[in-house]
Image (cartoon, rainbow, N blue to C red; front, side):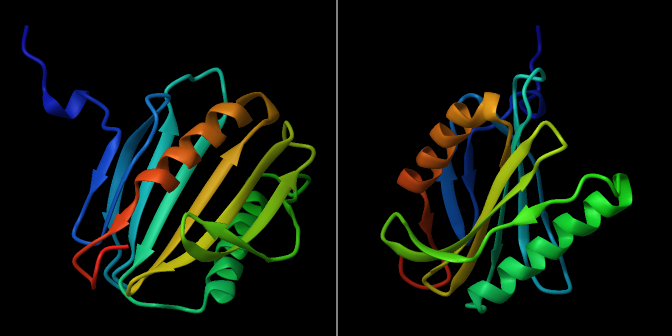
Length: 166
């Protein structure tokens, strides 16, 4: 039997700018770089199709204003819901300061009460000369596995190639 490498979902992300690992409950399914701003987008999905839990990791090759980047992601999520179902509206909390590993970070949490409910957050921080934004999206049933994966990302990430490592 021949197994293609494309059929083996990966749990390690390595690039010229950012490295991290995720738990076995998730898989990295897509990576793309946008030409207009050189942002790299990494889509991470759960392996269990019976649960809703996803991540997105986006990194930009320079330091941007964290609060401004969070507002951009907030607007994108609102627009996605507006296109799909105007009755389901994400409600965002205030942007707050947190720690992501050793980095000062900014985070905004949200809930979409009449969609499960769905919960999530966007966390933004600088890592050397990069801006990193992590989107975490889940339901109450998948929160434990989502928190485990976020912890793995936090414990294993490093920034390379754009300056000195974390």
